[in-house]
Length: 358
Image: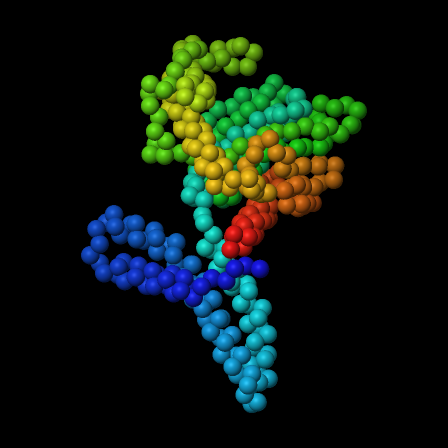
């Protein structure tokens, strides 16, 4: 049962909406202030609408209960009351979800990392399949995918691939993808028709901006060397590859995909900044959550989260016990049903946490 939201809080939300409307309509705000208030209004308005609806249903519920005492209105009131009794808990839950603390990184772009795990060549092929699945999903969302680095395997696919996915709310939708993804299928290289199991690891990190993480140049060890491709062949003949070591944490980032040393350094710094930001978020999350472990949103990259079974055409997410018999469509990037199920499960878990704390 969701804890009831106080009437005082609903009034405060509606008052803030009205106050913002009034300020924005005044016409005498400085441009930066107007932008800030417009952004706040865009966030507050849907919450205020839900608050107004919840307030209306609560008042109607009280009025209808009072009408039950009137012999002439009793039947009509009882009928309408049944409808309100269904809609009111739904409105309470909707409002509670809207008021859940938001992850400050939800609206950010994200960095996607896919690495082949156990399974040799087949794992690399699967890592490539996963990366293309996310590319297609991103395209359908109107997001931009930019390859940062890729280590291709000799049979196709990737040993490791890192990309930046830019757009509104990327991290909110992809953050539950972090973990071990397992595939069960007959590899293209298998002549006997036996089903093999292999795996790939996915990590999704919110992209950091320069203001999020302060990196001191004296904390960096930068090595410059010659880029090399598969089989030791030189990608180019200049010393353009960059290896940056962040001395305080020991984090190492290597970037050699660009021909320009400056471009490689910029991309390496982007990756380093994002990984340092994620490290800070993990420390903060551990402090806040204590011993309580989230079922859906732990982001633990060693946790087996999903199985893709090709012979049965199914995808199973083990965290929420959801099985979808739509594997071909999902590998083509149709992930909306799965993503929304994970978001809903996370919301339910966090609501339960609030109830436990209440």
